[in-house]
Length: 396
Image (cartoon, rainbow, N blue to C red; front, side):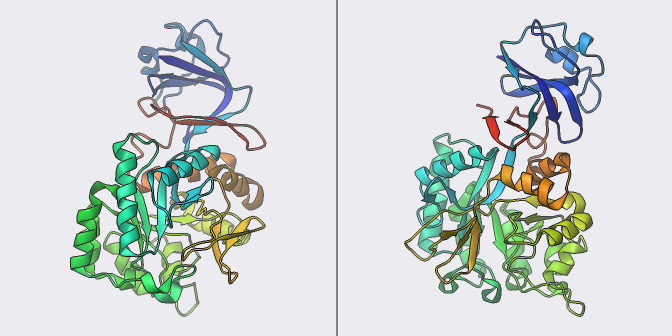
C-alpha cells in the first residue's frame, strides 16, 4: 500500500521542505521531495533511491513518473513531521500507571500520547514498592506480548535515588541499590525495562555496570551528586539526565553540582519539562544555548489521582501533591513543542527535533525513528499552525 502525503511543509529532522511531498509504502518511507505534485502519480522506491543523501529529490517531475499511490493525503499547507517520542509519562486519560500498572493504564497512556503527537512512549513509574514494580514489569510484558503499539519499555524513576532530592517521591520506598537485589530486578524485568533514573552517588560502579550490561539506559536524576560524582557516573556510562534543573544538585560557583556537570556537556543528553512551572523560560533558553542538540523534551505528565501514595491534584496547568509540592505536568508533547517556539524562542524545526530525533538517539532508535528518511518507519504527525494535532500515522 502506497501513500502520498503532499501539499505540506515537511520537517524531516534534517531539512525543511516547503510545499513538499512524502511517499510511504507498507509503513516505510520511500522518498520525499519539494515542489507541487499532481494527483496522477507518485514516486516509487526506485526513484526515491536515486535522491540525494538526505532523501530529498531535486526534480519533482522526474520523481513523480513511476507508480500511482493508493492513498493521497492533502496536508492543506500544514506541517508533517516525525511523530514524537515521550520518554517520561506517568499516565493519561484518567489512568495513573504508577499506582495502577496494567494493560489498560498503558493503553490509556498511549492514547493520551497520540493526542499530543507522540507515537512512542515509556510509561514511567515513580519510586514505589517492590510489589508495584513487579506489577509494572508484568503490565509492560503483557502489553508488548499482546501487540500493544508504541511502547518502548518501562522507565523506572527510582527507587535508587537520593532522599535529599526526592521531590515528590515517597521516602519509604527509596532504596540503596545492592548487587543481589539489582540482579533480581534485572532477571524479573528482562527486555521490558528500558530506562532507569538513578542518583549516580548512590550507585557503585558494579551496580551501574550491572544495569548497563542488561541493556538499561541510565539517566541521572533525583540526585545530590557533587560535580565530581556526576562526572564519574557519566564516565561509567550514564547517558542522560532526568528533567534538567529539577530535583538535582544546583549550579553553584563553588560547587557546580549535577547541573554544572550537565551544562558543561559532560553527559550525552538531558531531558527538560517545558511548561513554565518546572523551569523558568530563561533557564530553558540558557540550557538550550549550551547543550544544543543534547537537550530533549519529555512531558513528565501525570493525571489526577486521589488514592495511594501519589495523590496528584490539578492546579491550573500543573499538578501538585496535597501539600503543594510540584509533582508533574499537564503537558502533551505538541504543547511542549509550542512552548519551545513561543516562550523560549527556539525554531520550530529545532523544537521538533527535541521531541523526536533526539529522544530516538537517547534510546538508540535513530536508525528507524525520529526523522523522515528513506528506509525509516513512516510514523508521522500532521499538525496545523495553531499546534493542533490533525492525525498521527503509526506503522502497523
